[in-house]
Length: 161
Image 1 (cartoon, rainbow, N blue to C red):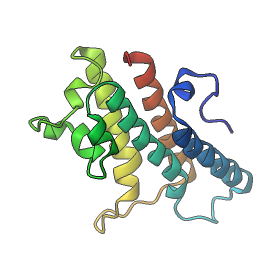
Image 2: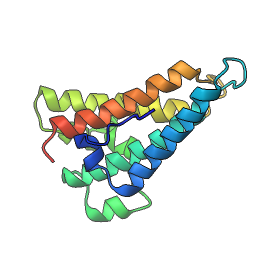
Image 3: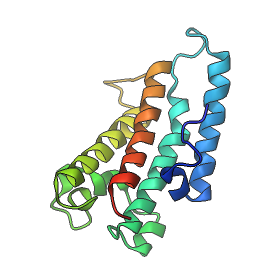
Image 4: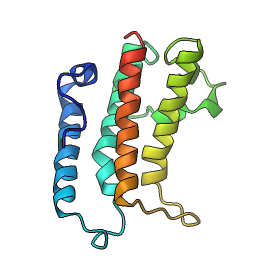
């Protein structure tokens, strides 16, 4: 299963280390797909992990290329993508939500999509909430992976890098 076409603008935009994460994710998807039985695994969150990690790397690179973060921030261990993309933190100087892809409706739509996918594909999958323990079914994990890929593709095709 090839999640991202190798001749796409998105694939061409990705550096090798992010491509490697995506290829790892595809290998895991292919293995699980070939051996998938609804009863053997209680939580398919692990399928999302390489794609979520690639998404974080993509966003850092994308924000750097869009001049929304500096090179120092890009290489910093302290940058928190969820915080700088979060529309609830717009008053912060480092917030990128309103600047992602221009000030128009299309830019806001891209920013909203990036944020929604971040929340669904990373925060809700990888954080443990005792009051709201979530397990992903196989189909939901695939849906989240497709959302991640679609958000990256939309960013590359709709924004001028």
